[in-house]
Length: 78
Image 1 (cartoon, rainbow, N blue to C red):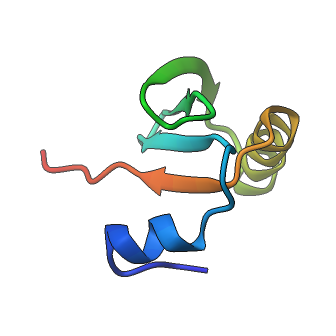
Image 2: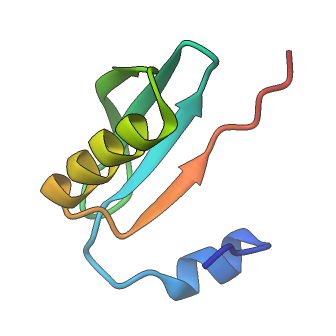
């Protein structure tokens, strides 16, 4: 589900589950995961982009392994 506001996103998440932040670049995808209280996020992995299906499979496996409940996408400004 895509949420339009932060409040909507927060209400949709189950309690005590991590969220992931993705930095989508043209060459790499940076992945950070929060702690269970969602107070701080730590960078955990950089995926070197190859093909969409391979990138998506690696990302989904990583998020499932960490028990991630939601994803926040970075907004590239430059």
